[in-house]
Structure formats: C-alpha cells, structure tokens
Length: 381
Image 1 (cartoon, one colour):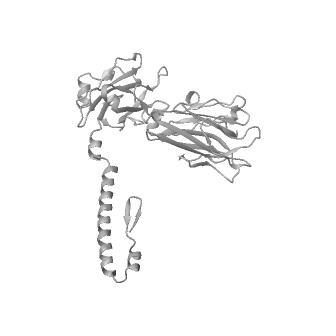
Image 2: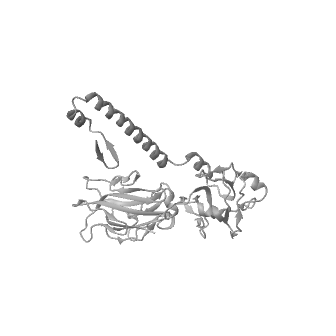
Image 3: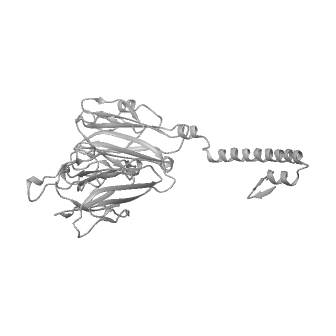
C-alpha cells in the first residue's frame, strides 16, 4: 500500500507479485480496503457537493421582492400592471406617459425600508416624492387612491423619473429602471437615485421598465479591450480602454474591429456595428465578434455601439474616432445622440450628408459618407 497526498491507494499488482502463495487472501484484503476507500471517497464527494451547491436555491429566488407598476398613458388611461422588468406603456405609437403608480412586495422577508419615486412633468418640473406601497397592493388600486407620481386629466407628459430604495432594502437590493423616450427610444438601465429620461428637452416618456436585483457583492466593474484590422497591417495588437487603436500619420483605413467587454459583480455585454464602404450598416455583433470586413479592401465609415445588461446602470462607454479630412470627432456617449436628432451635417457639401442609424437607441458615432476611419479611442466612465 502506497500513500499519495491524503489518500491511500492499494498497489494490487505489487501485492500479488510478491505473495503468489497468498494471492487469494491478498486480493480479498485489497478488495476490502478498496471498498472502504471507495466509501470514504463517495462520502467526501457527497460532502463537497453539499458545500458547493447553494443552500436553498428555491428559497433564495422567492426572497426577491416583487415590484409592480402601472402607467397612465395618453388615450389609454390606466394600463394593466407590469412586474419585474416587463414593459408598461407603449412604443411606436407616440403616446405620452402621464402618471405612474408603483407597489413593492417582499416575499418571505420583512426588511425595513421601502421605495420612493419622483416624476418630472411638463409645466410642473420635478413633483413631490411618492412612497410606493410596500404591502403588495395592486398599482391600479393605488391610482384610485391618488397614490401616484405625475398627473391625470391634465394632458401633461412625464419627461423623466427617478426612484430609490430606502432603509435595509437599500442595503440588500438595487432598483434599476429604464424608459422609452420620444425621439431617442430606450435609455440605458439607470440605478437608484439617477434620472432616467430628459429634462429641458420637451421629450415625452412612452414606456418604462423597473426591476430589483441583489446588491452586487463586489463593486461593479467593467473593462473593455479592442482590436482593429487596418489596411496593410491586418489585425493589430489588442489594446485596453483609453488607448488608441489604429495608425497615426499613415493614412491607413480601418476595415474591421473586435470589442470585448468583461464585467465583475453584474451582468453586461457590448453590442456594436459598423457602416462599411458599399455595404452600408452591417448586422449587430457582440463581445469580440468581428464587425466590418477583411480581405475586401473596404473602409469602415461609421461605428455605433451600446452596452447591454445591468452594467449599463453603472457605466457609460465613451468613444471617438479619427477620420479622413475631419480629424478627431467629439466623444460619443452611451445613450446619447451625437447632435440634435442624431445628424451630423457636412460643412462643405450637402452631398456629404451624414447617415443616420435608424436602429434602437444606443451610443453612436456618425461619420460622413466616403470618409475613412483611421483610428478609434474608447474609455469607461
């Protein structure tokens, strides 16, 4: 019998070879010992399984509070309640939100605290804070009692909203929300205390989604790395956020790009696409996918990108590009258009009108037609 680490292993061949006369007895002894070792290992595996698996996954899921909300929309009145990240309101119909009622229900827990919210309304500005019901009441019944933010019967649009958890609930959970806005579409996820929507632009809210997540056990973090395919060079070295990718002073076009996002503490990813010479806008790709072309000598003329998942509540991605004739353009930020209505107009010729990407609202960088990109620069804030 030999010893390896903490476990004893029978070398059966050795025992049989040295004890031919006692072969049967040695074999039986070895078999009995191996059975004991096997039983020990089995019990160890069972013990490790208990340690690794969650204590009670069902109970943990049930303990998450439920957030319910109902909106009062133009032409519709009070709409059916939505829960836990589902959409309340309308999209694509041009109907304003006028009021919202929110209810919070703890499932199997009784932590102190609650949720409060505040609406920015046409003509009125920021209105008073409203406390969400914490007994799981129907949002529709709250509306009947006047427990809502916004106005009813005055044809006033909601333009922005903010909300926050209080007490012990704020120590255990994070409230995330996003809104669908006139002109801009869906915003990024916003975390408690921050404003979702616009102020001073006269843009209506049209829909909203609200959810609670477990407060991250570690500080949410994100890192971005990117790699470009450049004329004459092929794929260049991968560089981290805050570093310029491409060439300087050599007039070499960018032809393709890969962007990789890593997150810690929360979910998240990055989606991006490019406008390519003679091909137009390419399809969206995500997390290290190739956008653009290789081996076709086609220049990238524009790029747009946006973050996805809960990381959008904690970070914005900024990026800018250096392009032929124009040099460095201004920084673009996740969730904001470059200029009014997303257009960039040529200063010298109407024939060089900028294209407008007509997809879902996202960070974007618009480059004039027929202008090649030479390098790109990104950073997180």
